[in-house]
Length: 483
Image 1 (tube, rainbow, N blue to C red):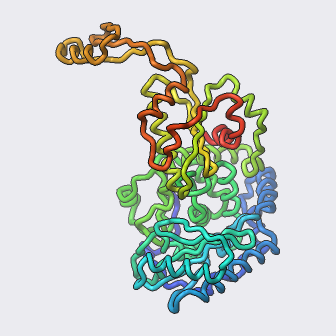
Image 2 (tube, one colour):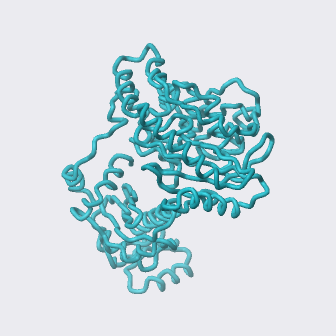
Image 3 (cartoon, rainbow, N blue to C red):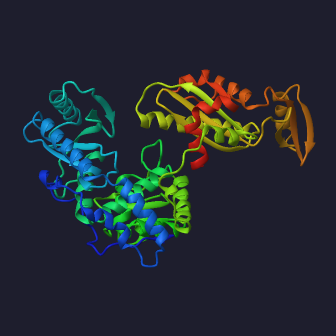
């Protein structure tokens, strides 16, 4: 187990004091963003310093872009705020306010903070009405976290307007989204200006390696988790060096909310535990899958051994090279149409059915070397790589011990028409297979296997192989890079 270093702080900070509406909207962009690479260990060779300096210049928004994004954020706060009821406060949260957004991105998160007397349903209706009144021509979408919020686009930027309860000192959080206001205040109090560059480097590093995003589709690192890791380990290099040494359980408690690691391990079952500084009952790293946790450790080690810009900006794999990669492999896809539903619901169901089909293949004699899923929101493809192209013409099923006479009789009756052999003190039934390849296996599964409610199109799915897979080269590239 690794117990990460923590700051000297009171044992339990508790819920933070009331957030000041205007205290978070100062310009966060300064030339000190570029000092991240200059603070690195003097032991660093010029190679890593040069790579990080080059990358940081590419991913840091210029002054013009920074001002434009901040202007859009301020406009939305003022315009939407005018149509909210008296007593409802607004607060800009997220990477724009914290100064950690990447060049070319900069989506805006606006929170409408309601008194606790409002129901969640009424809060949403008020937010929806305010957005409709402020931007009547905008194409508005309803998205969902713990409860619904409004999403629309303005001047090329995605705007999320989220209803939440205003938090005051000593109060318990009523819903998960209430934490965002506390997260913003914590990061802005604890993170130094130069560390914004380190957060940007970590975000870009994770994005390039398919590890960024806490949503079900990715099961990776959230932006807030990136910020906490940088605060804890001082800079990008510190995060990677620490991660490359992680083994077993990893615990990080920045505010010493718990007396010792035993308390933390008793409270949280996950392998990777980062106690939320503003809510000690929450593990910020809980969404990170065991697979992604292990891959993060591995890719950190590779970068430290041989720094390269490709860890931040990987080269695309051409269709021709993907075609070469496919040759000699038993790689298949199942293409089908899916309902248009919320991403988290869609990807939750995709993960479940992909796993169920993988288990079915294993149970019927195949060796699954890898699986991956890809969706553009309308079409979904489940990818499977198998060891075997074709199974033997006969399959052998193990029966009961020979001394269990009654059970042996039932087994023979169940497999009427099969050949029976005796070995290892048991009876075995040998039957001819109804199907021997992936296509046959999928047809069998589609008839009676588990299919989630919103993925009914899977039962009419089309098996793809060879050149038929190339049109989903982005999905295959993800499989090649991230497995």
